[in-house]
Image 1: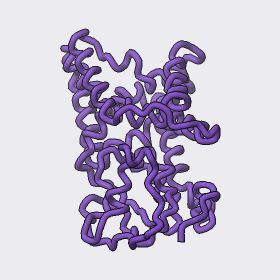
Image 2 (image 1 turned 30 degrees about the vertical axis):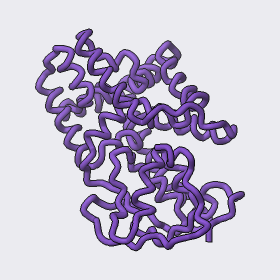
Image 3 (image 1 turned 120 degrees about the vertical axis):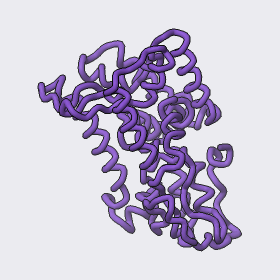
Amino acid sequence: MSRKTDLPIGHEAIQAKGWLGAHKYLLLRRASQAFFLALFLLGPWFGIWWVKGNLSGSMTFDILPLTDPFILLQSLLAGHWPELTAITGALIVGVAYALIGGRVYCSWVCPINPVTDGAHWLHDKLGMSKGWQPKRATRFWVMGMVLVVSALTGTIAWEVVNPISMLHRGLIFGVGFAWTFVLAVFLFDLLVSRRGWCGHLCPVGAFYGLLGQKSLLRISAVNRSACDDCMDCFAVCPEMHVITPALRGKDGETPLILSPDCTNCGRCIDICAPQVFTFTHRFADGPAPARPERTTSKPLPEASRAA
């Protein structure tokens, strides 16, 4: 039986699994984001230089280079041949995200994710409409534009406005112009377009989505026959259109979420009281019974139908 519509999102999951169980992956993501950010701040704040640099390019313990492949690509198009350490770092990062899932970066590493999640939380609390929703392909046009501008100007164009780098600079140097870009992302998601930045505009997310199209880490609706149509998974998913093919597939169709738009954030696992979803790998493509037909099934959210 579906839950009553007046119950808050996650009510059933909290009752079934407790508050911690219903927020496990959310808390782990916040811890992960804080951990990676703290590594880069240890040097500027406390003089502990385990990691030098930022998420665009860094050196760990003066041994391990890590480079954002999107930054490297812009550098090459700009006509700047990078050092071998930067190329090595980009290969390490690229292979890692190609294997585990490119948009894992968006939900488990990117420090802008808590900013956009905070905007979405406030957006819901204020009961605001979803606002303008650009086409999801817009982020690929933005990515292409960034690469073209890099080639034409001989610069790493995205770093001029990259809110990730701006947040890092703001935390190091204090109040300044850099925070303007972070605030702009927050206000855009709050006032203009619900989940608009990460889901529709960010070229970094677009790039990592392409990088991780064949990645191993996947979420599966393996227990979809237990779905009670509460719709909570759609409510919390930042890319809700990825759920439908797996959750509402027929017998014999894969329960895996295969869309490269999936960020593997795990919130659908957290929020599901019948425990429909689980983390798995792309080769776990075994049979899964379909959801039973329901004559009173709730309609998909508007944003999912339009995606």
